[in-house]
Length: 464
Picture (cartoon, helix red, strand yellow):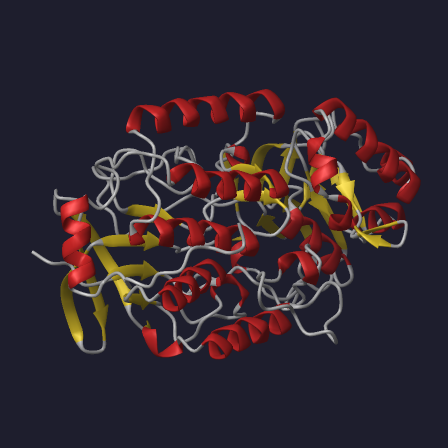
């Protein structure tokens, strides 16, 4: 049968990047969004229930690095915009390129099932009921900061427990003893914010972290993440980064924040311009990992015990796809190997956009991923063989294990500039590959072209 469309799941920052690329390339698609508006994680109080944004949230990447390539953020935006400014930027992006009418809102994708011939049956639910439609390809852009990872500690806690995903404001935390668990970006932001109203905020960490400010020597942190920086051997990158860091704020142990035992750049960076000062003020006190929960008290691995009213877990997120059957795709411990963090080697015509953790912003990377996959779907670029994809995945996993500490948060780690270069090379290289079962077969591609799924005037990418 002739398949007429591509399905995009989600209209967050990655989903709209894919939708825009497909729209301008003339590839018909349906984009389904569970909520009533675009923006995903950046829509504060999103009615899709998946946003982890809190009221005081600002970006950790500067506006220049976060912006899409052909649509800069407004000049009057600060370098580190807040979530409402970011959302307005996304709204303007969608309207400027004119594809809002191709997004179906208040519509949940409840099931995606492989048919067996490289196509997929997609079931959606909305106010009009349930229906299933077949698609020639599925783009998964449902994000990975919405399914909280809740740790389990011995004992029971009688106070309030929440995850950073559910935190919005410090309301109700006045004069309380608050324990934030974890030293990721959200955990550190929330620790600083609650410390302004709490009786005392504690921050629990297993191995500490290197805390990077948003500005170093008057420049934004990510302005140092140049192609030249990433071209340096890892030991030189570590040395260069630590020198800059020391010049910016001295030794973090001088503030009372412990130095980690692992090497610099062996963990996803923690970015905060406030945390060390709040630790120095005594408003945030550092504690080791939790040993046991004991009613209204918490015992720590150093043998100390404290009365705690509220525990906020900043312990990351699980990769989750509620629309896939578990016997089809079921990531465990956040292990989800993909070729170039996009292509599943076992399932043709199934692509994942934005499912990566860069040192830098996700949005430009999602844009390049979308350009690549649009070329693949259009038949201009082929993918390597399954065996080659698996060899590359294994190689990348070894490199990650070599550089980073063993943690669920590093299974999707990439470097910003090198990753963009990889995708560019993949597009060039893909034009030389022979067709494989991981592409739309040549015969079907011609049928799709005849049915106008593929625009015969699909342009080559002048950016490359």
